[in-house]
Length: 300
Length: 340
Image (spheres, rainbow over the protein chains, first blue to last red):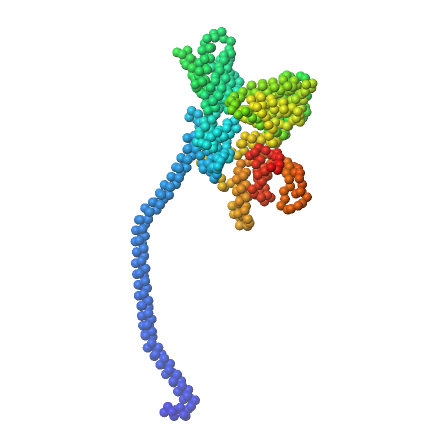
């Protein structure tokens, strides 16, 4: 039948047959698809399922790791603090030690002789003092070579540095420094006494204090009582030993015109003795105190 | 008041610049505050000077007072004079120097007055136990010339005296003798050192020009000081060639000249009397038997600072010749160089 239809009505039957075939093909593919879809869906489903499974595993793994880490951090936080404070305190200790040493080095100048190493030798500092008062410091910068030499210094020109160096620098440097120390301390002491006399007891002096660079010759006219009108005494102090701060020669003269010579003579002799034994400004302090005692006795 | 003394006053006061007038008169301390208030300082200088001279006449100012005023003016203007340095010496093993300023002054004056009847000697004590001496010289028959005085500055118990050059060279031996005997020395020698800057001369001979010392108390490390050529300034636009060499020059210059301000001198003079030395054989100059004589003079407003900056500026090699760098150490700026 199909053939007859096909032969007689070629066009229509062809169209009919091909169209029919087409329709059948389409039906077939639809039904295939319908069959496939659940399969595909299943495949997708199973794929998704495995993916979900994998992700779950990964999640569990990560959360486990996280927990581990947190636990570790807590533990190490508990341990880390003592470690860090240990480091800080070590550094602090070192810094404090360094500051201590620096302070000790700086304080050495109070011993009178101190020094600091330099690139070419040593810079010695001689700090002078008199009766507990810290006075000027002087420096000698030495170059350590053969022969030992002085590079530069701050010693005043009237201190016989060249003489002392010529005698002792090459042979006995300790002695050189000690002798220089003696000279400088004595000079500082004499200068201090003269300065104190000039500043604190100017009212007791007639005119300025005569002095020289080394302060080893002092000459002045003075009175004992500030309320006195005249200046009855003249003093001349010689310091022939440059290593001492007390005079070697004292001459006190009385130039007043008072008739009662004996009391003045006693005073004059007493003053001479005082200038020999006490520092200059302290002699004048004791004059003032005696004056006060006299006043007190008059009052009482 | 003598006419000549009045004229001397007038000329001395006229020299003083108006800006310094008050300061100088106060330092002189002859005219008190009250006296000075009676004078009008705003008038023309000539009238002011006239008023002041009249005031001095009223107060019976003497030649000595005028000489003192002259000393003070010179102390204010010490750079106007050229100062020589003299060095005295003692015989070795002498007694301690018990220097008495009053004895020194009277001895000095006596020696001059015994030799020259006509001489004016004036003194002014200054700080650091020093004294300024003014000497006006005359002759047997002529009164002292007050307008050409000699000034001497002497620091007690030191071997140095600073003398403002005088044209009257004939009086120098007498001056030397007076200084030596009065200060209890035996010999006096003129040093080869001369400058206008008295304070620099003092710094050189008293060795006071380098006063920086390393101590534990100082906080500035010495390495950080630079000579003005600070290579450590990091500016990426500047490329420093020869950096190593520049640093070497800086180091060498600092070793020689130090970090301190240099004493001030105006010149250094070298008198050469040497044979010509040459590597080349022959040549006219090399064949001379006699030494060549020539004079080389370096002048500068501040010679030592200029020398210090030569190597860093690239003008000279470092280290500089020791003939140039020894000036403050040796205390000389006049040199005579002969073949040995």
